[in-house]
Image 1 (cartoon, rainbow, N blue to C red):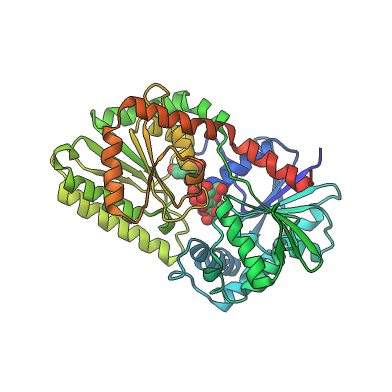
Image 2: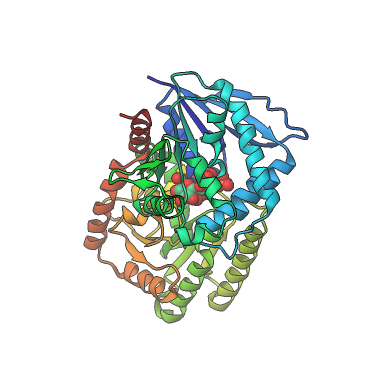
Length: 458
Ligand SMILES: O=P(O)(O)OC[C@H]1O[C@H](O[C@H]2O[C@H](CO)[C@@H](O)[C@H](O)[C@H]2O)[C@H](O)[C@@H](O)[C@@H]1O
Ligand SMILES: O=c1ccn([C@@H]2O[C@H](COP(=O)(O)OP(=O)(O)O)[C@@H](O)[C@H]2O)c(=O)[nH]1
């Protein structure tokens, strides 16, 4: 079997003993995928160094070999906080109002991608398959080609691909997309993002795309395809009935004192639609005063990308909203929102999910959203809860039995909460059965198997 060289910005082997567990979906999925293959996971250590040396730190953790490099403060500022998270992330999540186009972000992004290429190239052997991940590393394939790497190289985008009319607002958009045509295969989470990419290639670059997603541009032939990512169903459903999950379940059930729990679990990110969600819940409490005290919202929101101002602002907004909603509705023995600014290990989350009658997964845009799938996987088949899901999450294309909402509409979300609370058990079971098959069958193992097969060209 060929070795797999996985390259992503963040390298973080899921550590069962770690207390916070808030790695984000990409790290969780790649940890699971790499356990299936021999190979190396390469990327940034998450640490700073005064002067970039390119020294590799190789480690073997939990059956996975990792190779990491440290970056200079200026690199982190311009590449990770800058171009990746102040330019591409907002633009790709349809927030051109938040996207910042600073020239030094672009040059920092290219410099760090060059540094990645120089450091990882010597690790690549002739038969290896190379798999690059996410918006931090769009041009890496081209930089590896420039260093003589002839291996099959694939790229997977974990976030949405924006419509052409938005993407063209990015200075040098053509140059960036042209570098992507050096990959052999490009994967997207959904058909929608795939189609947007193909539209750009045809309209802006003048390339051709055939019915199988084969793109032709000058001398390049690249295959583009959708590969919806899943969770490690086997591991997660095992964890969901383990001791940690059971005590987390008990803890939440006891503290809820008979109230129905609504749960949200999201990195503190403006793309997750948290202010709209809180406002919709506020509306629900106001419009349903008689049943308001029968519910409680638990929002777990670990801080994310804290050096970026828009992330500091979303934190302030939510603190203000939580205070005003709790102030307006609370009583001496009841607080409507439990807002928790920390992360929990997934085994604990599994218990919290199972103890919750409703999950509110209402991002304004999301590449996939693994929390939605984890919620479904953690339910009691005899008495499952209801998933309220944004139609703008990648997961909505697969979990069609969820209660689908427009997250921008407070009325719709408030109404969905009412419907979910009143939903008869038979309907909850029927909807859950529709979703669990997808979560189980289209899991992370299938995702990595399908992508690797396409990467091999088989
Ligand atoms: O590494 P961070 O900056 O802390 O951010 C965490 C990850 O966020 C994004 O996750 C995406 O990937 C998930 C799995 O495919 C997907 O379900 C979700 O919709 C995406 O938002 C980001 O794309 C990752 O690179 C980050 O590591
Ligand atoms: O306190 C937390 C919050 C989140 N997560 C995990 O982080 C991932 C979030 O992935 P998702 O695709 O929903 O969103 P992302 O953060 O990657 O945008 C899921 O596996 C969650 O279980 C976690 O382990 N602990």
